[in-house]
Structures are given as structure tokens and as C-alpha cells.
Amino acid sequence: MTMADASLYSLSLIAPALVLVAVAWLLPTLLGRFLPESMLALGANLAVSALALWVVSAVGFALSYAQQGVPLPVLLDGGEHFAGLGRMAGLVWGPILLLALAVQPQKWRPEL
Image (cartoon, rainbow, N blue to C red; front, side, top):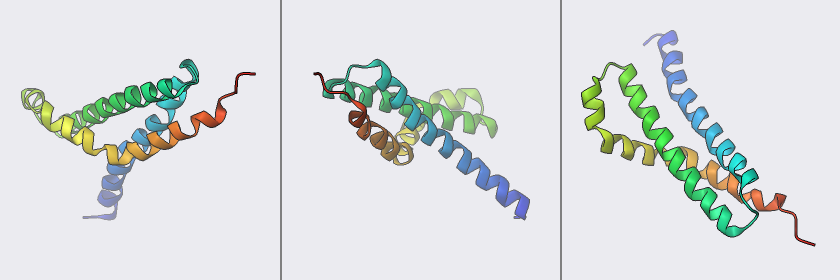
């Protein structure tokens, strides 16, 4: 493997991870602006954000497989496989999501 191949390989691993990290921070932060300031809304934000990130991860893996030449019928039959990969990607986006949600109550203003 040449140095150019190694850097391209590294980029193909790092870029999707950085996208997931960015979405894991931005999605709950943006949702938090529209939801009420309550623990119930924070839980709803967690559920919606986690579901969205799981789907984004699974679709990202499917697109990666398609880019490598896997035929569409094989991709469509592999939905369960991609759902599992999206779930495992939670190791990347899960801690960032929890951190983004943990700082939200600090921005809440008490009712006077």
C-alpha cells in the first residue's frame, strides 16, 4: 500500500465519522431550540435524535456499500445488516449525543 492509498483509506474512515459527530452535536442542539425546557422534552429530544442518527448511520453504510459496487437488490435485502451497522455506529455518535443533551439544561432559564 502506497502512502497515497493509506491517506485515501484514512480519509474514507475519518470523513464519515466526523460527519456523524457533527450531526450528533447539531441535531439535538437545534431540536432543543424548538422544544420546551423540560425533562420530558429532553427525553423526546434524545429519542428523536438517536433514531435519526441511527437511520443516518445505516443509510451512510448502505451508500458506502453502493459506492463500492454492491448491486441495489443486494443492498435492499441487507436492511437488517445496515440497521445493525447503524446501531454499532452509536459508539461514535452516542457519547456526542449525550454530551449535547447534557449541556442543554444549563441554558434553561428558570421561571420567575
